[in-house]
Structures are given as structure tokens and as C-alpha cells.
Image (tube, rainbow, N blue to C red; front, side, top):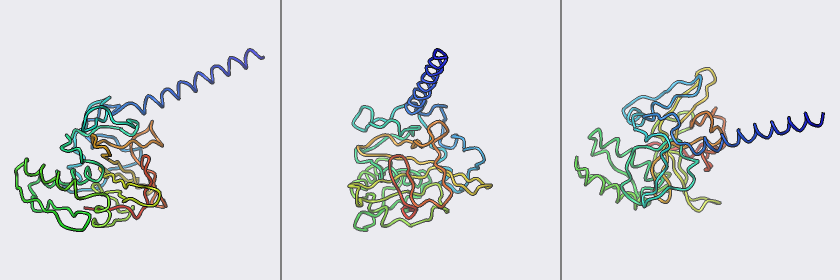
Length: 257
């Protein structure tokens, strides 16, 4: 009897060890199925992608780097907290100032630039001054403009000057953003890059992309609560707060370009 109990306990420890090892392996494994674009990441069961328009298409068409790709710092070397990286976006950094709010601005500006909507490329600095792009199709001028914006815009300016939207009306291209607040010396921002809904339950699922400080590769944020399933965050709309990666947001902290 004692022998059986001992063997059973050892089997339990072995299974537990395998599960723990598998959990850590999944957390360290970027783009596990080698998806090619954001739009090729499958939605959770029962969900269907929503959202239309060119910006939605642009975001879903962003290419991803291959399996095992690590998030690199602009200055070189691997970033800390690789566990937050579900897949690295194939978007080359242009500045050591390209951090969280800047990453959101970068993807929105790239969308406008690609569609030759140059006169619409304009963002406000922390004082509300509009910084408009005037360089036309010149890639050099465009990147120089972005570098200037990076030094003058921030989570504060995104939070103050972008349009507030509700969680139930979330669309690809929206931004979860908060400036520095009590208990948090710095703000943070993440960009919604895809949205899906479950018509039966009314639940909403979304993918997030982020940059961070110090400047690093933009990446799809992993949902640490469900690392074995997918990087989708799922809400029912009744949430009083949302834990997105390590960061806490409130439903009134969603903005739209």
C-alpha cells in the first residue's frame, strides 16, 4: 500500500513537472505556429473577426517574424521580459525614442504614409501643439518627422488629445493608454491590432501590440492568463479594470486616432 502511494506521488510530481516545464516553454516560445501576419493568428473558438476599413486591413497585414524570434533592443541585445512577446512584428525601429506611445503613433503614421494621406499625418505634443508632416513621399523626411514627434508626444498627449471610446465599441487601431498616475511613475500605451466578437455570448476578443522602454521591437502582447491558448484578450464589457500583460487599465482609458 505504501509503495503504491509512493509511486502515485512520484507520478503526480512527474506530471506536475512536465506541466510546469511546458508552461515555461510556451512562455519562452515566440510565434509558436510561425504565423505570417497578424491577420493569420486564428481567433478563439466561437469568435469572428470584425472591423472594416483600410486601417484594419493594414494592421492585419503587418508581417510577423518567424518562430523563436526574440524582442531586440534598439541598442542591441535581447530585451527583458521575453514572456510578454507572443510574436515580433516585422517593423524596423528607427529611433531609440520609439517607445510605447511612439509605437502606436508609428503604426498609425505608417498606415497614412502607405496610403499617401500625407496631409493627415499630424499629432499633438504634450502641450496640445499640432505637429504636421509636410515631407510628402520622401521616406527620409517621414522618418525625420517621426523622430521629432517621438521626443514631443507621449502617453500624456495620447490620453489628452485622442478621442475617448468605450470598450464595447473597440476597433482595430484604438489605443489603451494611461499617463503617469498615482502608484505609477510612468504611463503606458498599447495598440489594438485586431478585434473579434462572439455573437452568441457578446464577448469581445482583441490582440494588442506594444513597444516599451527602452526602445525595442514591436510585438504582439501575450495574454499571460492564458498562455497555452492564444494571445487574445477576452472581455464581456462589464469589466471595471483590465489587466493587459503586467499593466492595469480602466475602461475609460481607451482612445482613437
